[in-house]
Image (cartoon, rainbow, N blue to C red; front, side):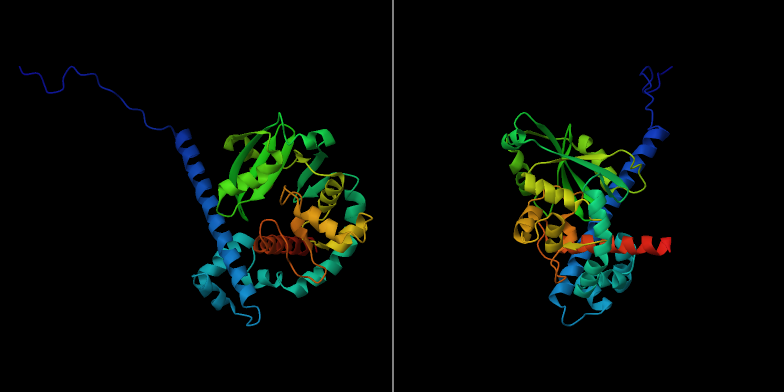
Length: 319
């Protein structure tokens, strides 16, 4: 009797992926897709803001703005709502000079309290408890010698970010345009003697805590500030400005007891290397113009509009 072809060979049973692995892979894939969608939405918002700035005199209608970013009015509306939570028309109202002037006036009383309380305690940002420590003069001069900095690139509602983390806390947070290497060099310049390690796993939990939705925020975020005594004072004052509010360089100087130092204040604001958490984007010109931001004034306008929309929603919900 002939032996069937293949007889005597061991039968190998290949186990398929477990349900747990499939679930984890599916969730990871969904997270990646959601991150890419957020980045695409932000780019469209940025393009829309750029178009509106270039055509401010014409006051273009929504259909014209949508066409300028190569989208139908329907898809533009949907993309904007997904990113900002409100309609483009309402969002764009938060970007006008008139709104900015009103916001400066309305924020005054809030800031009086915020500065009085905040300058003597930890800051609170979108339900994040943020505390900070300044490096000593000796550490400042050492440029990070002996320090290990782990860094990673992560998606945010305002484009990709570069995050620097040490054992003591976050020491850098920058928004990235297109060139990761340039961002890494710029942010790492003040820590030029430190050891820099690309470690996405180490920085991811921080990115999730800062920009994630619905996560536990009861663990304080520690920031490590590297600057002169004056710069650190300015950055600590910035952390007192609540989301949805703005102040001017002159007002910030007055709160710090330096009413004639607006230029020095502006320089210190511009040297901030921990974006968003040290909210230098909330300082605008006293005329209401939104200018001067290390990571681009288009992103600054997007940040302010996004925060204003959420603040308005919170006020409405509390009423």
